[in-house]
Length: 120
Image (cartoon, rainbow, N blue to C red; front, side, top):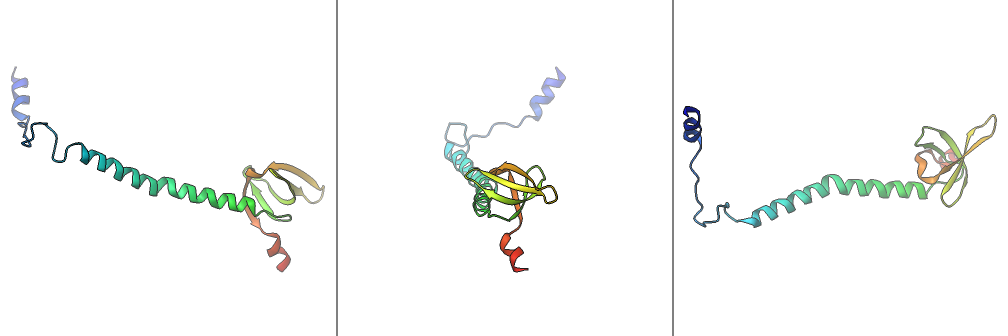
């Protein structure tokens, strides 16, 4: 009994806004504006950089040329010997002339371009 009286004494009295709805000033529009603001911040911080990174990756995969040295997602370093529509054939060992076929999307990055090798 004493505990419940103490809780009631600690609870602040409800304050009205004069509108009789029990909502704060602005009503549901304030909530919509906040949700829109959160979505915009989410877009600029997470989604937009991801899209930019995806475009750069597609550009890099489209610019792969014969004799480029590349790194695959599996950590294999090789030299591009042949490029097909969705496949790339890499030479991974010079002494045994070992070649492996990879899906083009398995290329993580280009380590050195064939043009930079020819210029050196």
